[in-house]
Length: 573
Image (tube, rainbow, N blue to C red):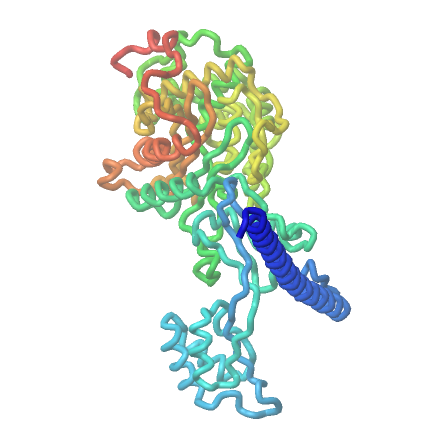
């Protein structure tokens, strides 16, 4: 074979290979197109079928396909997207006495036998109550939530009268946490209590229920607050507790708790008794926590200028009444000493010089004469002294008696006192970063700066020492007030409160904690006042939540107290 023939043969082979490769590619492409076309056809058939079902459903029930695909009720989350309330399909257990029609017996076994069989499936079932339901011949729920495996066991009993219908259930994945904030959904599908009630229309509306609603609370902070409140309540054998963490600039509620709590996943008679919200609905005298508010009003009005000036600390006599301190504090005190040692007599004299008109106006500006401003429906109405305060009433209001409000009133007031003087309503809705809600000025900015110093001094050297958290610059004031009863105050029953803010060199958060009727125990050195029980809760809570909220401990920083410390004798610090 010569060279020319060999060359032609090789060339012919290459052409055949290229032709074969092109043929294979064409075949593969054709097959792929057939596969894609087949899937597209199936998808089109499915879409048409869904559209047909939607149109039929719309004609029969008035519900569009888009509505049918939405959750039955919108989701609620915390500020970080953590789910707090969700709707999902679930089984219920229902007794239908007419399952067989006519007057036929709905149960094969006797009511007692069937109730006993259900008891084996559901150990917490009230067997006698179920037996009575069967005997009554009336339809009714036996359980509102049944697991699939439990439903199968019920079916295995062979009782036609026991039905397990599919229903939409509202579930709270965090259990009892933030129960008083969330509320629950009743058997009629409507929200009750809390934000479930407030947002009911939004969560039920097909146009909006597909959009989760973000609340202001942070579940990490909420968990820490509830944990410390429960610990404080148990240590002092208190009958209840409440607390709040509030953003001083926006009014956002980062956490709000009332204990004991109820379980929104299981509403029963016991749970209904625990639905009272102590933070927003319990009205009581806040005691000495009002003293800083009185001093702030007096600084604004020019009544208090010189912090080294001495005020008479002897008992104050007004008519037949005498105002005393809990224990002798000396013949005279200056303002920092008065706050550190919580003197009623000096506060009464400051309020007297301030006058009822000016003190009353500050309380009105702080919202103390109306229900606390927040979206929650359970809001207590204050016991307000009226428009004309007699001299004695003005004095007692100055140190937190003679007027009763909620702890939420106090939290919003303290936020205004430390944030530069601007009051903001509290809110359960998440505020977008960089947005500052409109507020109203109550105190001068210079007054707010001075109050930050004084509150910090109370925690460093005064009654609030047990709230000190190294590096977090906590400032606050204690308050303990006897609860009223028949014929006067009950000396054996008090409410102790601690109102605080941190960090005091640039306040970001206010915390208010309260204990209802704490007892003197070993843990509280047999003392019942706030310095021994409510303040320590804050001291334990701040180091837990500070880093979560972007506040890191720094023991090299603190608010400047250099102009106040010299006027307080070292022996009193």
